[in-house]
Length: 142
Image (cartoon, rainbow, N blue to C red; front, side, top):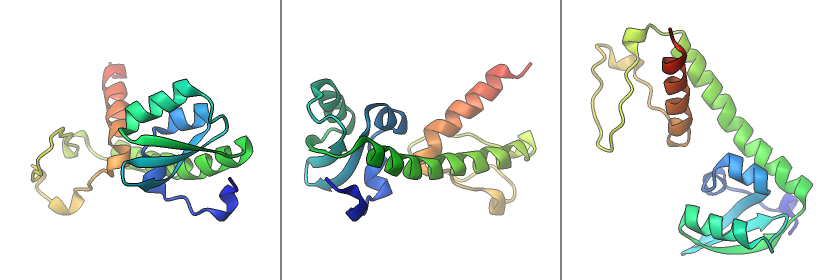
């Protein structure tokens, strides 16, 4: 498949974790009902296909695409996420510890922060990475 003529939706692409996508050179292209079309360098790799089905909970329809092209598209998509995470972590580092509140809940909740104008929601695509970074920094702290 010629990916240069295909507009990849970053929301669809992020249905697969970036590390797995880059490692296995797989790129989700579109979702149609319960079927996820995925560009792959090796669409015969049944182990990866099963993993994709398990992770996404969609039936997988593989199409072949070049390794170089898939890697370039994935790097563009996940590079922007990493840049967002980097900016978010820098802003957290520059804030007073008393201003940071980490809440792991499914229900919407008002912040205990006195100035709600400082509250910045974390994008869903970055929550796991932010949690891991905060946990790592907490563990590493003396």
